[in-house]
Length: 365
Image 1 (cartoon, helix red, strand yellow):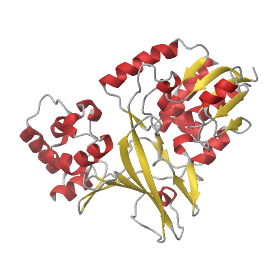
Image 2: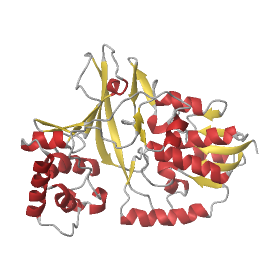
Image 3: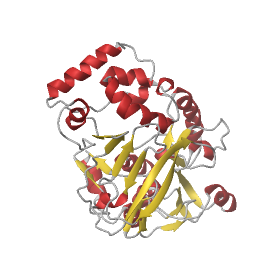
Image 4: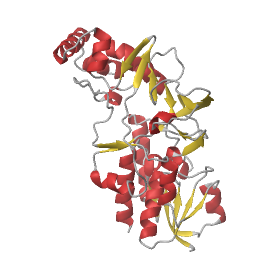
């Protein structure tokens, strides 16, 4: 055995695991099938702008231990996520707050907004929501649903809201204050210099090989390491023998524009179904950039197929049951730890990824 641990995936989970194991004197090899480290938080330098190649990533947490841990590897700026939604020729602030309601209904006070929502919820008359549409109507009424939820959600999931389960929207964040801060977490920001530099610092002193497919590598080097940390797709690890788990994928169209400021905000959602993309990201605003040019990315949601990049697990009843069967296979796999978004078939915010990796590292040590 040349290494104590083979860590499959150089994303945030794999990097935290590698760092912690390395700090405890374990010899690690990190491999990744992509041509770069940092997984989906990878930032590419274009025109001096740190472009979030796989979609917007804003670090936020209320856990001071996680925040302090991340601050070992980067200084964070004071970026506050305040997305804007465009519906046809109307523009609204997100999350749903008094700025949203004032624009939508021409009102000023929290009580007026509460009364309007209560009236529309009563008009909907739904007591036991059977699908996402009914769930949303029973929470915020028809106006917010039609303008800010319906089109965006149907693009995101590729299905009519009536055909989506209600649990996708267990609750909707509604604030009766004039506050556009999307997250309630105490700590929030973007690492100065981008996320790739964060992962580079985590992996200092550790051997990393990119452009390396795990399955081919394992065939060629079956005894390379004593134990494996696997952060890829759990169903792919087992050769899809029980069937493929479902995901939604995302396609990005990124372009450099010869202007200083394209949309005035980092994140603009397009909630009208007639607009084919879900949102436009203008990357320079994550770090308050002053560059002469700007870079934007349009995001298109799509159905996932084997061979495509998986992004969002479809955690409905059918897939949850299938994952439970794969989890049984994983539990019987000696000397392999499955983790991360794909290994656990679960969508994680970044702070939860870090927390899960730290807990897993502590457990296996």
